Amino acid sequence: SDPNQQSNYNAHYNAILFVSMLVFLLVVLACSALLRTDDVGTARISQAITSSVALSCFVFAWSYFFNDRPALSQIPHGQNLWTCGFIKVYRTSQRVVKHYRSLSWAIAAMMCAEAAMSALSAIAITYLKAVLDMSAGEIGAVFFLVLGMGIPGSYLGGYLSVKLGNPIRSALVCDVGFIVVTGFASYFMRGPENKNLAYIFASLWGAALGWLPPVDTTIFMHLMPGDSRAEFMGIMMLAAAILSWLPPLVFSILNESGVSMAWGLASLNLYFVVAIGCLLQIPHYTDARQESNLASYSNVNQSAGNGTDMTATTSETAAQYIRSHLHKDGNSKGRRGSNANIHDIGLQVGGVVLESHREVI
Image (cartoon, rainbow, N blue to C red; front, side, top):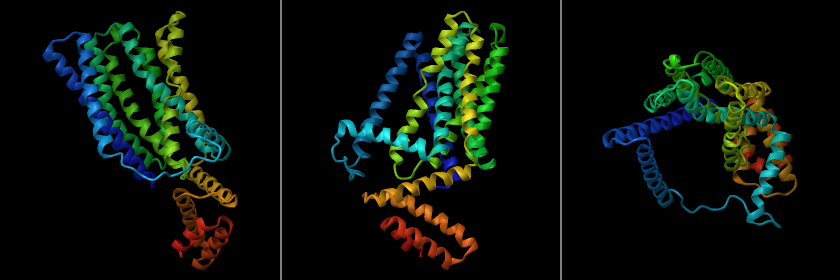
């Protein structure tokens, strides 16, 4: 799909996510005010609403959306359901490291940046309470700002992805902004007298929290292979959560060692620095996408040469590669030369590309 269109789609989805969280927070606060509950009672209301909404949505989706569909692949000979998933993930990891270097760097960047962002809320609550001595109501107002600013932040990330030419640049700008904001927050918010600054930094954090996830998703979706989309989306979700335990652990170790909480908050910047370093290893976005297409084409070629049954999604990957190849050659050769080039490729990869050959001609 078009990167600009995908950036806008992901921005809309993320904005809807923040709107939903904001509405949920307002409903919980309204119920708490009407019933005049304490903190424990408010937590009970929150859990009751969460359970009811989740149960209703899951039942509806399971009943009407999850229809029967044919299997996209079969269990390989000599394997079973208990082992084939682990083996497939292992082989896919090897394949990514060997053939998709840009995707490998994108995954590493996502692991670090998403870990720091997911830990920010837990660390911020502790910091606001222990250092700034904010009440539960004041902390709630801070996170109300975070959620509210996440909505324009989502659209800002999508806009800059289009304006700057590719989502990698947008992610780099967001990571740098996160470092600057968190660095200033840890320096200036040192006591209860600075609690008003928390609202300013909460707004900036909220914009960044809305900005980065849809941009990371866009990068990943356009660098991943086209023949295993479901598997790679699972890998993306794993990458976003696999290191979420590390920043809170580092913060706790620093705090228990007597180090100022300001340094613990500033330690989040280390993960963004690593994320920036990983993103800088990715070549130009167009080159990175071309690398992914070439690797996918090479995988198609190898599978066809081994006599492996090719799926429709793999055929689609080959067709996309050939269309781009045809477009390039057509600028310099003309239609006849381009079709001859496609015919040569078709002889290499067999029926998959011959099908695309007929479509192009």
